[in-house]
Amino acid sequence: MPFPYKTVLITGATSGIGLALAERMIAADIFVIAVGRRKDRLEALVEKHGAEKVAVEPFDVSDLDAMPAWVQRITSTYPRLDSIVLNAGFQRSLDFTSPASISLASVSAEVTTNYLSPLHMLSLFLPHLISLAPSHTSIVLVSSGLAVLPLPRCANYSATKAAIHSLAWSLRCQLSGPDSPHTQHIKVIEIMPPAVRTELHPQQKDLVEAGQDQPGIELERYIEETWASLIGEEEKEEIVHSVLRERLEAVEGPRKTAWQGFVSAMRRAGLRF
Image 1 (cartoon, rainbow, N blue to C red):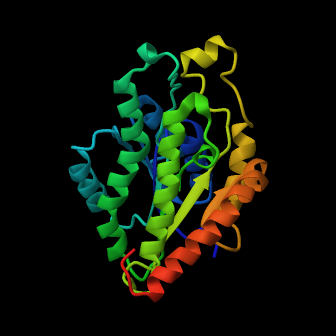
Image 2: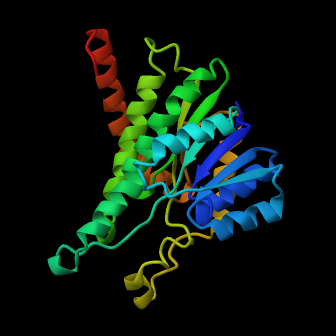
């Protein structure tokens, strides 16, 4: 089934992959609720596309205390919301050989934005998505190829994306389980980008100083392939760009087979998993 969702909320929609996905969806006549901290960029998005095609919601997704009330307002304002794309995140270097250089505040902020925020958000949006049954709904989690093959320079970032990747497997398993008919209409899709030329790297002073702030593939090339996968004939559970696919499959294929066997054995035994 091609991408069937008509009202989509996207976090981190003011730049990079989030913004590019938002504009692809708008072009496909999907109503987008763009979420981000930078109000000026959100307003520019409305000015460019029109309020009939995109709504903007300034919000700091790391504010976990404010999130319950915010989600309640979103679902009340946009009752037809049928998909959430949890994309917001940032990356910082972490040098364990120089402990004095480590900012624990930054480490905690990275974990909050990259992992705790999507975990809280999907949990808070689930009652709404469940209520839309039997209509198709979805949760789209943006992880990274670094979830499987971590980059030592950004150890914490890689770990947060590994957490998202693991969460996607368990969330999908629970929602699609044979004993959960009330959630089987909710699809869990994971997008696993490679390094892409966005603002993620130029925001890191050490990479700029080393002249390594523009790694990876062009954003337009990345979005072209990713969007084609999202609207393909068959809805995919994991969207991995071709530059990563073979490398990740060599690692993930056997692991996924083993995990599925484990889950099946637990189900046959009637055990909670």
